[in-house]
Amino acid sequence: MSNDAAGGCQCGAIRFRLTVTPKRVYCCHCTECRRQSSSAFGISVIVPSDGMEVQRGEPQVWTRPTASGDMLDCAFCPECGSRLWHRAAECISVKGGALDNVPEPTAHIWLDSKLPWVVIPDGVERWAQEPA
Ligand SMILES: [Zn+2]
Ligand SMILES: [Zn+2]
Image (cartoon, rainbow, N blue to C red; front, side, top):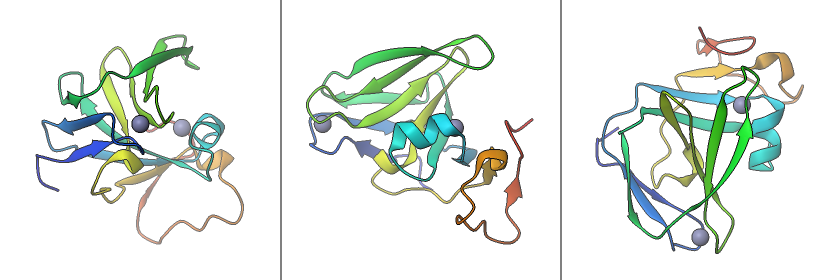
């Protein structure tokens, strides 16, 4: 994908762009991603902490603890409620569906909790839980 990947929320109040080309794009089948996305899995586009910049609007942040005991800042649009990205200590996980051009996943993770009717394509990288 190009290094000028842009994205935004559903109502358009918030726009942002990636300043680097992401090397890792996960389809995450964990129960947190499922609940957060209100869907069968989440798409996590991983960039470094400085790999994303807000171009318009001001997201609100909801914070939750992770399984490993860290805190995760979850940014969302206060107007339409779209979840946009999660900021952890060492990186940002941009929600893939918020990008104008959703990149192809490099791996499927947390297959231990995958829904039985979701079929993973042949030949893609797979992890039972968190990728190493
Ligand atoms: Zn919005
Ligand atoms: Zn997940």
